[in-house]
Image (cartoon, rainbow, N blue to C red; front, side, top):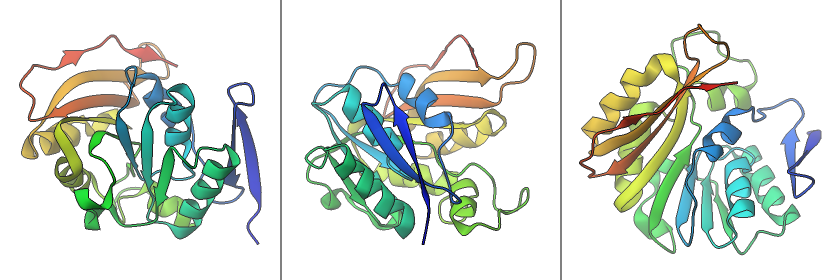
Length: 223
């Protein structure tokens, strides 16, 4: 039987179970959520939602929104559903255990205004593949690579819908190349450093479907 760790967040306003030995979220979802602008009545979609942390954070901050979380791994999707119930957000958050590559707009009750993701970030042939399957799929591009991600994002987003993604900074070219191929125009690029005078570790990029404006390079964030 899987053991769980319960994380208490935002002064106990959120309680999130995570697998003790499987994939657990890091600081990345919190960094990404901090860059999302104020939301009103939009519908968001988190691709690769894991235990549901991003929808839970955003709905707790903006109760008027609706959210979907897509997770291909049955164990993590079950945990995410339990976390939604634990936090009494069943009317606001829906968790789907599906392959995002098989989804269409008809799978959602309303149009998708914003897609958010902290997706697998390691190429399948790079680095050691974690022996824990849950961690391996979450970290390596086994079931979803960055090219597939933007193909799906372009297909599922509403007209002028937006994407927010956090990814390794050294893969910025992969992000921008695939955004361009799918007519998603970068709007904001923000590099994240763990130390001053060191190369950036992460980058947050936002984009708009069929957008035309030039991107803004924001001041870097040091953590």
